[in-house]
Image 1 (cartoon, one colour):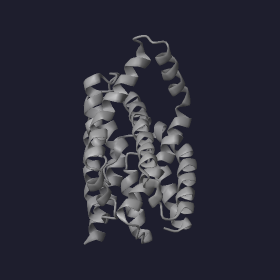
Image 2: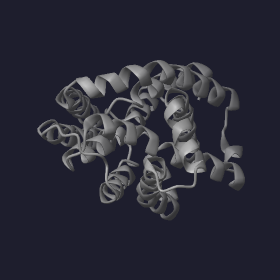
Image 3: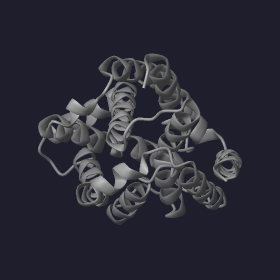
Image 4: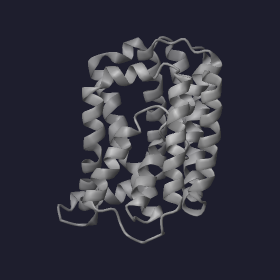
Length: 261
């Protein structure tokens, strides 16, 4: 992968991470269009690093929330911050288990399979359409909700299934408030991404980067694009109907399926 391709893919990641349209799916489609011939391990690593960049964007945008959570935890009391942290931990369990047990199988899926991405984008469209039909409530995320949302996040490890789309849709279908669902969705992925990067560093997987310059350029472009996109996307998810995103995912999914044939 050359530097220009990495720049383009980084911008794609930064812009699509916070919309329920599958950033990983768009990355795979982008790789296919650009003719990326990276081996699956390198392709998967690039995807993970791009997600790491947008995870840092999330930390910057939600810095006040994170500070409040840490401050609450340091009080060592059974408060709202402690409960929220436990819900985040609970939501991480399904994805952590799947990631550890099926890491090699997941890596093989990140090799530019346009057909798979197209099919999963259509699944995402269906989820968003169903969520759009759900009634708006002020219900917060419960512990059982957090675990179910975590299962949705684990399924969203497939390229083409939008992580934010799957988790927000699942949360809304469970009767949770859209604003609270979006906040929980964006924050719940950060520990997983940071954990994945830490694991790759400790296991030496970062030695398979191929072109480290391209990886760095992609990281920076994804981070900067993510900073701008995160604020805008959060407001968009709160105010707009998810059906708009459902239509987009359906159209792109159909086009991807057609191209794959």
